[in-house]
Amino acid sequence: MSLLTMIFSKSTIFDCEILQLPVVHKQSGNITSINSFENIPFDIKRIYYLYDIPGGEERGGHAHRNLFQLLVAAGGAFEVSLFDGVNRKIVHLDRPNIGLYIVPGIWRELLNFSSGSICLVLASLPYSEEDYIRDYTYFTRSKNL
Ligand code: TYD
Image (cartoon, rainbow, N blue to C red; front, side, top):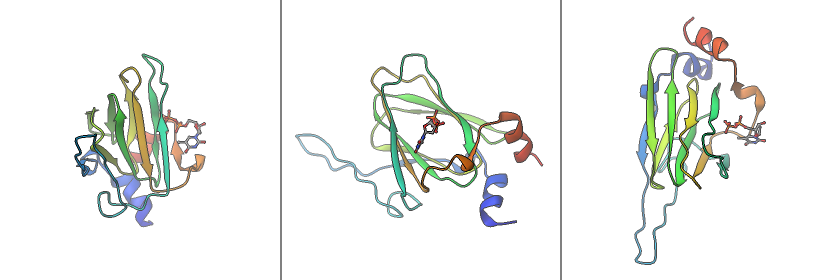
């Protein structure tokens, strides 16, 4: 079994953490800078962000095989529901200097977006549809072998 397969099958929601990101305070506003291996435990290969999310919409609804991510509410607020096949938790994100670190093998759903919110995502790999598991039944079976 490869290390990454092992991470996928063995990972739990307790491996996912809230990370405090650094803030440079200025009277004219704040800056948060995120550096690979300094502020987050992976190399950033991709950045994307969700925005213009209509009220009541939900995003996510999948797991990743190999991808590590950091989710940040760069604007507004939203909730992230995490499930590892056994345990569940809901994390509320509402500050640009707080990140949610998510490891591979976690089913996530993003919901309750406030109006105008922005979900910034830092990812450890380029986009690849093969890395997604979008079938919930398949996911729960793969995690509980
Ligand atoms: P998806 O990750 O399923 O969205 P969410 O989890 O936010 O609901 O992606 C939605 C679509 O966007 C999907 O068809 C692929 C495309 N996409 C890219 O082309 N590149 C990317 O980096 C991401 C994240 C998605």
